[in-house]
Length: 232
Image 1 (cartoon, rainbow, N blue to C red):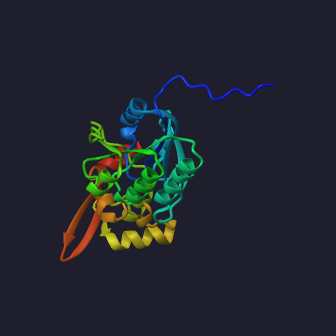
Image 2: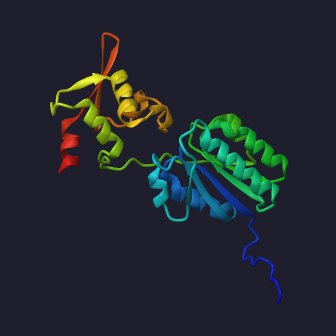
Image 3: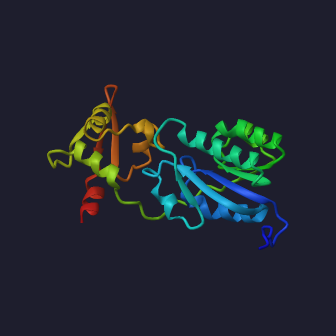
């Protein structure tokens, strides 16, 4: 019985793709795949993140979503471990690191020192340090916002229950109270969400919430129309 060597149909380098899904939108998936296939022969394509907060990546064809959990820097650490394992086992010739986070600068540098081609990709906000650490860097265009706003998800429904317990459309509460109540009732910490804080979370969902600051206190209320549509 003979053992045949791996069959290849291209001279492009074997490429491993690692996407920081906590930092990069699934709307970029097509652009990432196009980039990977243009610069290499991708045989491993993974997206890493908290699957509870990034379920859209699990629905993207061609990507394997790796759940990294909710710990601080868990996604970064898991990407680093898997990327170095691929490099040390000589299972790839090039690596595509997709993130706008400069924390991957050291990983890019170490992979290059191992002789791998490191292709970086990220949005315009990506730091110069990470760009310079890569063999080549490709800037991803900002994803086009959808015309229709997404409906409230399970997390928003829990927030809605806390803000509006008496079915009053005018109910508002301090954001600090919301944070404490979400932990007490659902063991949810905003620091474990990709948005990291309530200011960003609520600010990214202006179609659902109204935030106001009165005498130094930040309060939030639900927009009745958004949750009424969701209920229907």
